[in-house]
Length: 341
Image 1 (cartoon, rainbow, N blue to C red):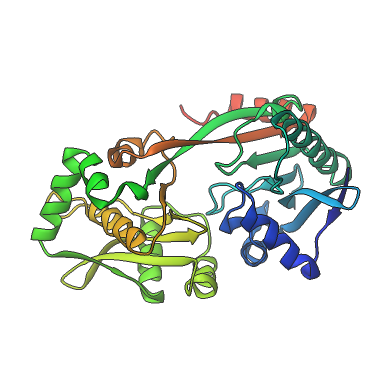
Image 2: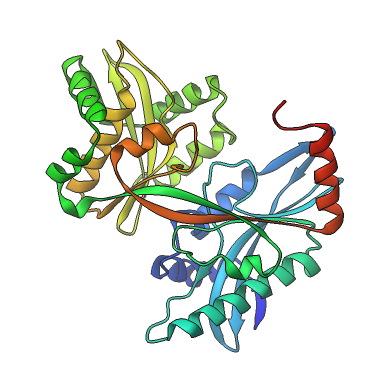
């Protein structure tokens, strides 16, 4: 196997593999990656460093095996490779394997192991990365190739609601508290509509007030501007024309997924995020999507809210690799400056 770095002329080949692979997401598409690259800048000791995108394609002879976008950022103490990049509004990225028909399971496992090893060798030896972080999309189910390369592996999960069961079944599966909250929201005049750019700004501002956003507003707005015609939709909950909460969803392939938003809010004892999600689910059903994804179910702080919608668990994995020196430095740092005191 060998690796090449894709360029703009490879955009169609790249996007074709993404859309036909079970691991491919909107975050993997060429346009999204290039927009994201513009905004990844890290400040360290008064020094600003811009990230560089490495769209890696792995070949076996003349056949593409798979691809993985990697963002490389160098600071005075670290050379970091991330897929997705650190501290950015993308929940997962990682490898995308080219769809193969009529190939046995054991062969797929061997190919994935060799693919992962080739990627790791490139990041470690060619880019000289001493810190690597990879978060897979829910399509990747076997983390063992990363374990064998000495990555630490942490299981994560999202919640997937099967929309094919129909609106009635989905509603009945919600917890009693969620159904009551939605009914009270309707009675109290809370309405949910699709939003425009000014509504996206309102959502961003609400999250920024609560210190729940990493990315710049300009990034969110540029994503919305470029994808809102088909792949990105905004939903906003209002009462008396005043924005209460909102979210941006990703519409790709057969799935709608919550991407950004749902700032915590309560009015008259009602959580408007419940009706926000319900109306978004209804929109997805009416537009013939098959699944609805609620991101971040493995977060202990938000789990009690998100689990009430009774979706099925969709696992994925967060992996980290440190060089021996970097691992020692991280350990010493956290001993002197523990995360929680």
